[in-house]
Every structure is written in C-alpha cells, then in structure tokens.
Image (cartoon, rainbow, N blue to C red; front, side):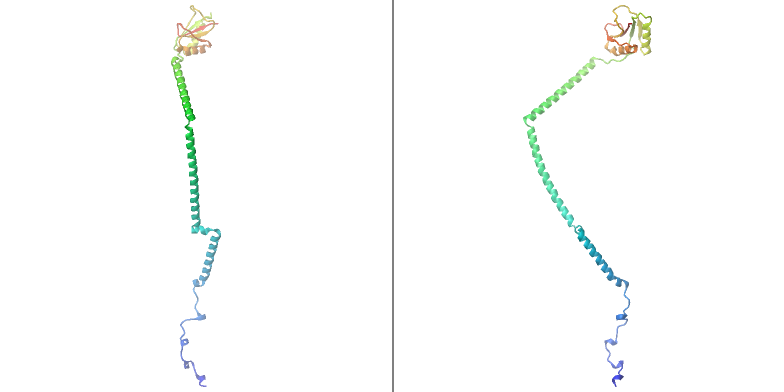
Length: 236
C-alpha cells in the first residue's frame, strides 16, 4: 500500500528529467527550401554530366578535348611531308642527271655544227637586209621627190586647127590654180600624132601628170630640149 502512495518526487532524478529545450523528434521545426531541393539538383546535375560524357565517348569528341587527334594529325602530316620531300629530292636528282646527260650530248660535234650554221644564216640574213635597205635609200636619193608645182611654166600648143582651142585649155588650167600658162600655135618642128603632155625634168613629172588629168589627157611623156618645163600638144 505504501507503493501506491509513491509520487514523481519519490524517484531519483536522471537525464530524462532534464530534456533539451525546444521541440525534438517529430516536433522538429520546418527545414529551409534549399535544403529540401538540394538533393534533386544534385541528381539532375549528375545525370546531365553522365549524358555529356556518354555523347563525348560515342562521337569521339573526347579526343579533340584531350588533344590526341591533333597530335596524330601533326605526326601524320610530318611523315607525309618527309616522304614527299624524299620523293622530290629523288626526282630532282634524276632530273639533274638527265639534264647533265642532255647538256653533255648537246655539246657534241653535231650541236656545234648546227649552232655555227644558225649563226651563219643569221649573219647572211642581216647582210641581205642591210643591202636591201641601202639599195632603197640609194634609189630614193637618185629619184628626188616629185610634187605638183602649179607655178611651173606650162605652154599649150594648138595643133588642131580650131581657133582659140589652146586658149580654152589655158583657161581651164588657170581655173585649177596654175599661174604661168601660155597658149601658142605650132612654130615648126616635129609634132606627135596624138595629144600629149611633155615634161623635161623628173621633178616636173607630178606636175605634168596633174596637167594631163586636169585637161583629160592620158599620154604623159618625158622629152628633152623643151623650151618650157611642161608643154601640152593638142591634136584632133
């Protein structure tokens, strides 16, 4: 019966009689937002990293990142360039040998003879060209330039028997610009059998041809012993 009368104060105090302050256990306070979503963020980040890693392995891009592909390309390029250089050097050696052989064969007796023949042909062609040029110059010097000189004396002889016919032709010449034209009748001597324009000096040839063209005469001849530089003989 004495046991039923025992109260809380009848027991010896222990650690459970002095609990911590604040709620504990199911009575804990609310957690912060970041603490609650942090596990989900970590899971998403790890999944993304795993996906990127798998793509790099499948596509081979990890070699580019690690620099292995560039190293292999450089190594292969160096080896190929070395092989090309070796081939080029061998080809150059063969070409130089061939050139030496061809040059040595080119200096034979036949090559010397052909070069001498070419030089002789060139010298002959040069000499012939110079000779032709000198001949042309001499011809030009021997034949002075002939130009139309309308101040040259022109005598028109009327052998047609038509009164005033020589004067008419003289007027035609004066109208065309001739300033020293005279008309006359035959005064003896031998006359040609056709209408003609005579000239004495070679320098008057162009003028005589112009006189004949002006009067419609086709015959132009050089005659010595004329009293005037140009004589026109008119016949029927």
